Length: 430
Image 1 (spheres, rainbow, N blue to C red):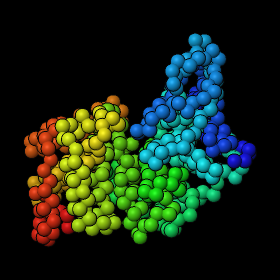
Image 2 (tube, helix red, strand yellow):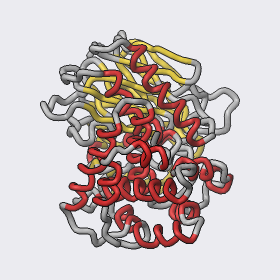
Image 3 (cartoon, rainbow, N blue to C red):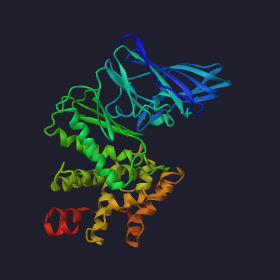
Image 4 (tube, helix red, strand yellow):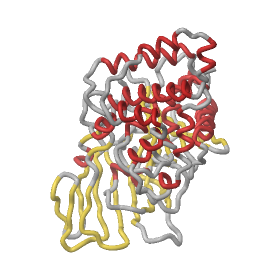
């Protein structure tokens, strides 16, 4: 990389006191960080794990602050207190599993994520970038102040371009077999579906960032994650995809819903079964509505997930599985969560002759200010109360969400496989 040549600054003017951060990029292997706090601090701790990626704090090197000493990996303390700190983050090569969750750089581009670059004590920051010649930086909006640093994602590099619609920005790097407008329109179509689903307008303008995978695996075609108002999508440019428009829509049906659930829900606790498992099912149903898949593919997908579910023990409730999501070797949160969402949706359709669906619950969830504005409500309590709002639904929740009763999907899947118009019409699928 060339020597840093210019600065890009998201600075505060007339804002409340905040930590000023300077990020300097000169090589693909490290990032230098200098931070000045408005008041002296005595301790700094760096996150060591994020979404299954481990050892993040081990990358922090050359940490310096007046009177500071290292207590443990990623933990530093100063007895006298210090306003200014400096350190280097050694960016190791990401694994295929963690590439969308952690900061990394190549010779041409990369992603910088404050969740693994900054101390967790920093509540509000302004950031200045020193980048190599020809590089620029993209982010969700152009904030004078970053009030939630853990959600901040920055796309840096050369030759990235921007395409926009009224409700969405898309930053794209690399050469693809589809036009930039195809990706933008695919994300926008999905966003329109979820705005209708929730009835809730996102508080911040979302951004989609698309770039090539930095690691070639020969197997992994794409990785994605949604953090704050940003959807990150990393793909293999060599992937053989017959219908890129449909593939992008399928990817976005899952990731874009995370802009709402859980990111726009100010709920606390481990309710991953809902914001992952139920999101997987809702994404599948949305792909069907968008005609990215047909009804047979919808049923076949549920059957494949059911086969996966049957291959491991069923001794955990969804509540317990969420608490152990990153230590349990089985994908209970995803598989069982998705299948429970399907059975719950089917139950509502049958009880109402197709007039009520899981979509009604999403609208009710986003109409509850206690779940959106206070930031104090416990996610499991709010959502279980919502899903179990009738006696039959309450019994369903006790068995399959709070309890560990084994799922039996074959009767439901066989019923849908008959593909009789009368049955599908009566359930509201057509």
